[in-house]
Amino acid sequence: MAKSGLLVVLSGPSGVGKGTVCKALLDKDPELVLSVSKTTRKPRLGEKEGVNYYFVGKEEFEADILKKNFLEYAKVYDHFYGTPRQTVEKLLQQGRNVILEIDPQGALQVMKTYPNGVFIFLLPPSAAELRARIIARGTEDKASMQKRLAAAALEVAQAEKYKYVVVNDHIDAACDRIYAIIQAEMLKVQRNIELLQAFAKEVEK
Ligand code: 5GP
Image (cartoon, rainbow, N blue to C red):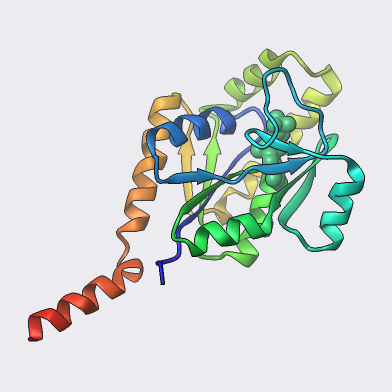
């Protein structure tokens, strides 16, 4: 049986750059598979079905909730987002390392079901920088920007529940740090017991 893969959960406040860092990480680490979420929001220009998200209606999403098809789900501002449970379980069983790029409400739910997951909190370099990034997106009105900043403050207060904190001061640097975390997690003794036992057996011969 294949050794179970690592479940990596990348989270952090809205506007910190989770999506961009995650994309860079997937380019750097060919062993890593992205879990594609389901969402009730409409696709943005250039987004592809099954690549960025599975775009579904509210009815389908609610049916999935009832069928317990989500590993976690949350309403992030105006839309619902959820991680398909079966796909993640299957990939992990096959020994693949899976990354979830999800909001902090979702990350806290996954901590309960996968306490051995690698929970990484992506932190903006400063509050001023986060403010600037949210404003730079330009897609939100003043009230919703305020809402995001208030939520960010609460989310950062919960960061102590994660295993790692990575400052996103530069995409490549943040990506290198997360890559290093994954490599170190793979080398943990607990993950390599079988290797040690096989060696011990061989050396005794
Ligand atoms: P966007 O609409 O910009 O693609 O994503 C909005 C937020 O939803 C981001 O913070 C993103 O990380 C989060 N998100 C994406 N997929 C999921 C998911 O499956 N579960 C949760 N909880 N959040 C998600």
